[in-house]
Length: 174
Image (cartoon, rainbow, N blue to C red):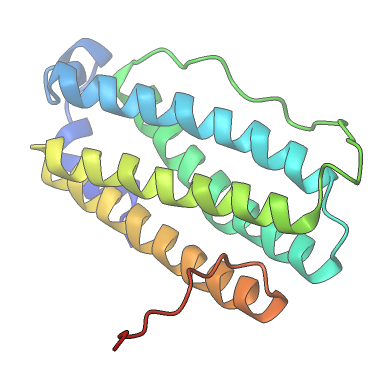
């Protein structure tokens, strides 16, 4: 697991201005953009969480928020602080929105969150491909592995509930 101590070569040496010379502008932008997108997905996930009726599914989403999303947000916030990069606008700590249960069905929420997971895997991959800094690249590789595990658990649960959209079976026609 990547820790902030893994960035010791980047953060050694005093002031913020000196630390800012240790990463490229594209890397700084990628960290900032990553945090902005995480905040957006955090807010969306909180809205979804308020509308989930299935107890087990709700617990799974809460675990993903706590163990993956919020820990990744904290790691990126720590890096932005180290490099003196201003934070984008943050997501609210809580969202009280409750929607119409006929619209916010658990199956729809499941598929919405699954699309979000898949989108974020692409965000992590873009960082992995773009970062020249080994520590940042390793951190984003850790992020994508965590996201893959959450996706795997979601797929298993969604199949169990019959929420995974299945294409028609393929069969050879004579």
